[in-house]
Image (cartoon, rainbow, N blue to C red; front, side, top):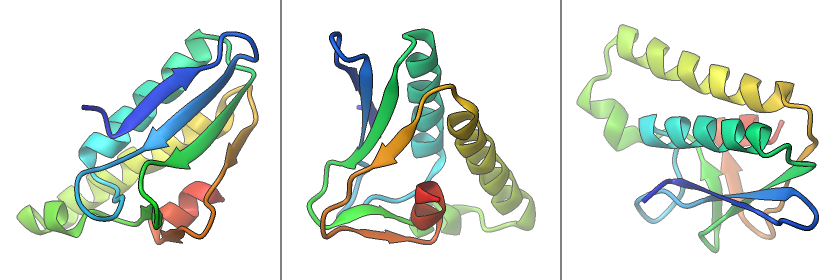
Length: 118
């Protein structure tokens, strides 16, 4: 199951990216980054008129890095690789021709989650 689910309204052409990673809060890991990139590419292919980012969790929009995943290989090379992939994915979303908005009523956005909002 994707950690960023893509859905587009055929009438308005507004795409919704629903973030729902494994665990009690949404975190940024390799699968999240891959799925965010894929959703962005699909929105571009579908000529989306806009994108809305939402969370599938009640209290967590996106709470930073997946520390359990990082602890499996916390080498400087691996950390740099993950950060660069996230930056590339976010840059792809930012460079897309459509506006992007996030909806996070009462939810947290920490670390890379806050960066995503920016």
